[in-house]
Length: 90
Image (cartoon, rainbow, N blue to C red; front, side):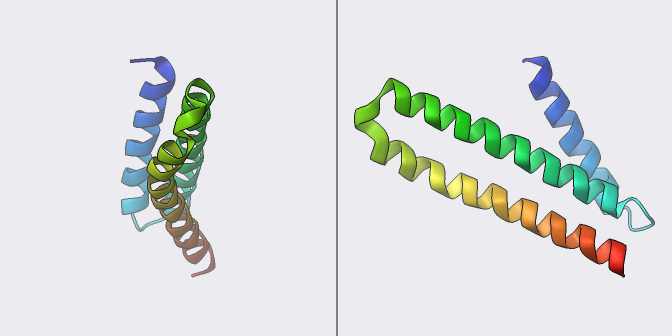
């Protein structure tokens, strides 16, 4: 496993641990979740672009397989952002 993937897995675990603590670490945890989701979306889109470049005739299949996970990752990032804003405001 590459060192970048190890760092991302560690960051996601730490961010959920911080987000679960309601004392004062919720904004930090939610911020780390947003960063992790952004990195995940970037890696996922990069892999999809690479797959499309290798097999241009499978564009529709690759795009269909990529859309749902990207939407779910974006939803996680938006929920974490809302948690962060609510923790700062409230």
